[in-house]
Length: 291
Image (cartoon, rainbow, N blue to C red):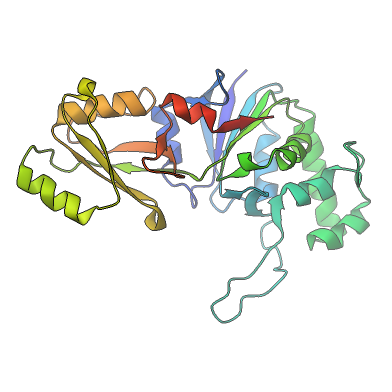
């Protein structure tokens, strides 16, 4: 059955291009999801996500690209949701998010795993919504649950660190399987600039990038270096030659990532350590947790 990527382009603007080039996404130790198409949802909310998911083929797959924490997805429940705490001074407004707790309020009877939720009027104040909004979300939820999706893959930071919350999210979507990374997760542009073997150029780059990792595998035929900048979600890169760069991309990113000499490629990586874990590496699968 087909699988569709649902992407908040305000959060991960390069994810759509990445999955068009590299449609095979690891979703477990051996399983892979082939992304057949994408739906772009800038400013994604739980409502817009469910509305799009409800149109998917029964038994298919969904790849959701969004912000996340170990608590679940970090996005509002509905457009124009009222904040729990208004913005003040330098503090951002705080909203009820589409995390496992909220999904549990919508889907589960308290203290059970049964799909027998609280009445809409009782759930509404827990979610800072009206009873009508709760009823609308639940109607969409039930449509999605009825699809019995084979796999929902969340590509959102750290959700895989809490298996209990993952179970609640899986119940909410009615999915047979659900996966998520247990580390920070992002997509970005890879650009090696002008590859060179100049000792002076490398010395200058190394001084500018003390937080780096250098790959010197014999199969590369040279050196390839990466220097992540977490605050800006960017990775500076340096290579001895275009051949080294092409070999590195082929070894560390999925098929389709390399776009030719002089071109920018797109990477997908987990950010916990140095070096990052890139999505074409075997180690990537060990950080995709499935329930």
